[in-house]
Every structure is written in C-alpha cells, then in structure tokens.
Length: 458
Image 1 (spheres, rainbow, N blue to C red):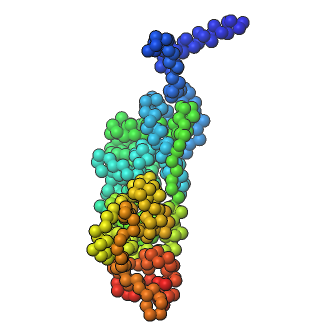
Image 2 (image 1 turned 180 degrees about the vertical axis):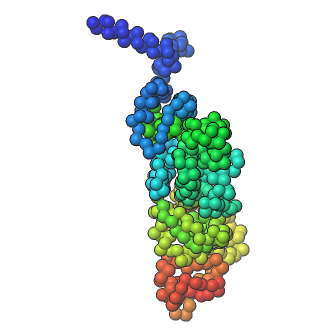
Image 3 (image 1 turned 60 degrees about the vertical axis):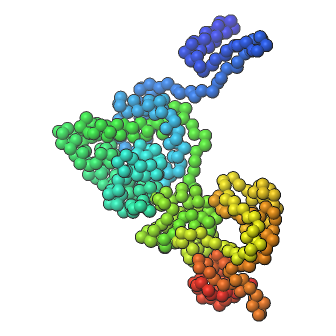
C-alpha cells in the first residue's frame, strides 16, 4: 500500500511539473572546479486560482446586494481580465481603497443609495483624486468642469474642487440620484453617468422603449457597453478577494484630519513652515489646491489639517492668520554684519529629506549646540527645504547686532521693534513667550501690531 501511495504521489508531482515547469525547477551545472553544482528551486510565484462560470454564478447568488446583478459572458470576461491578466491594477486599487471607501459608504447611506455604487469610483479613476482624462474630466468621480460647477464645486486655476474627495463624492451622489429618478434603474443610471442622459434616452428610443441596461445595451456607445460590465465585475471581485488569492499586505489608511477655516487667502508652504506640519501631508489632504495658494476668492474654504496639529492651529489661529497669506518666507532673524563678519566663511545648507541636525553638524565639523545657536533653534527638529547657516571655522569673528532692535531700556526691560511681516506669534516664538504674556506686558487688547511699534519682550 505504501508503494502504491508513493507511486501516485510521484506521478502527481511529475504531472504538475509538466504543466508548470517554472513553478518548481531544479537545474544542475558544472562549477569552475568541475564539480556538479545544484541550483535550488525557485518557489517565488503568485498562485492564480482557476474558476468556472458556474462557480462565479453560485457565488453571486449568495451575495446580499441592494441592486440587481446579472451575470453574463460580458461580465464574466471582465472578471477574468481583472483577476488574471490585470492583477496589478487590482492591487493598486486595494492599496488605496481604505482611504476613501469609509467616506463613500457614509455618503451613499446619507443619500439613500445602494452602497455598491461606491465601486463606480474605481472604474472612473482607479481611486486617484488628481487623475485627469483626455477630455478634461478630473478627480475620483471624473467630473467635467461644467458639471462640477453645476453641482457646487469651485473650478479655477488655483482651486479645483473636482479633486476634493468629500465634495466630489457628495456631488456624484446627487447626480446619480437625479439619473436614477430619471430612468428608474441603477444600471441605466450608471450608463447615463458615463455617456450622458441624452445618449441613454436615444438608446431607449432605438431599442423600442426598453428600460434595462441589457435591453438597450447594443444601442449604447461602445465605451458605455464596457463601463457597466466592468462595474459589475469589480463588485463581484471585491466580495471574493480570498477566492482569487488577492490579499493586500500593506493597505494605506487616510490621515486623520480636522477642518480649519482661516477666512483669508493663504499659502500652503508658508502654513507648513509656521506650524511644523509636513507640506506633503497638507498637499495630500488638500488635493483641490492646485498651486499651493488659496486665492482671496476662495478665502472661505476650509483647509484640512492633520488631527495631531489641529489643537495648535486653533489655539494660534488669530496670529497665524497674520502671516500665512504672505507669499514670502518669514525671516525670523536678520543681521547687520560688520566687514570682518562678511569676510568670514558662511555656508547656506538646505535641509534634504532624511537629514538630521546632528548629522549635518558632524558633516561640517561643528558642534550641535553651535549649529542650533547660529540658527536660533530651540530644538533639533528641522524640516525638508529649511535653510541652515553654518560657519565651518566656528563662531563668526564679528560682533552681531540684531536689526530688529532688541535692546535694554532704562528700566531694564527688553524692547523689540516690530518689523514688516511680523506677527505676535512670530515674536513670541523668537523670545520664548506666549501671546498672552506679550499682550499683558504691553497692555494690548488685540493681536494687531504695526511696523515700528516697540514691544516689551522681557
């Protein structure tokens, strides 16, 4: 009996190898010494399970859906395409899915729509909020400019809310709800979303008055004939990932954020520098801001801020607002130098991604404390793009005077003269005070200050 089992096992292995020669291969070659060297088998391949039409049909019957699902050869061919030939696209979609689907699901429920409609965004954009079609449609839901404006989205050179995930999703839900009321069938509404209600009405007339997608199928534009079957195929696949060996090991999750309204024109790069927020995070959270600037015409729009920084922003909103609208960087320390200082060697170093302050100091042969002192740093935190000044020969051999006129008055208080671009927040950071402390020292009733004004700062 053992011999029979062994022979059957060996026969099955031989059969498997004959059908899958690359899945398990072992080769031999002669080494330089003339000895036979064995190359071990390579097991690194992705298993793609086989499946039949009947198996897919059986799985679909068990799915609990809010909208109709008719399996046919066209839908089945797209299931094969995505699960076999274009798995990389599916994996890309799965990596982005958790960033948007929780918000999609909530929006669909708010508008009383089948939650399955959220999968339409995959067919439209591959879940890329900044993607643009050849005809000018943009965003997760691929709105044309005119339709975007019709549904309340700002579309201009600086702000294009078609790329705003929340606003475009709400607009898509409203538009699809209108199309459903018009045609009374969700599949037909999806077709109208793709090719326009006029083309669908024309297809209905040419079909003799049929009202279902498959009834008007052959009279629709070619792209639309593929559009709805792709949606149905994706709906099936996302419900049966395990059966097709589609597992995502490292999904990406959305940044938690709060909305903050600054009620003014602003510059994202400046906001990042003032608040310590990573500029890349600000850009990711606010994809509708095209060129880093919110213009005066969009001053009322809310900015998404990482939740970890929202408390700081709200606490400092009044004085942050004095500076974030300026396009030029805040200069925290300007110096009037003597001739001897100007002649000493000073290096300007722009911080790169991955840099650490200690590493920069070591590379230039200076101490960490000196580097902090020269750049008025209170900690070792630095940001990509920040400019650091370094004196490789050590402390500059000059007498420095602060052009902001920090001095001692007759009573021993430190006096600071306000310069253009200053705000109370900037001054408080410079002199290790709180805004309230500066206001109390100077009997100020507001945060408004002006150039030339003298303030007590210590």
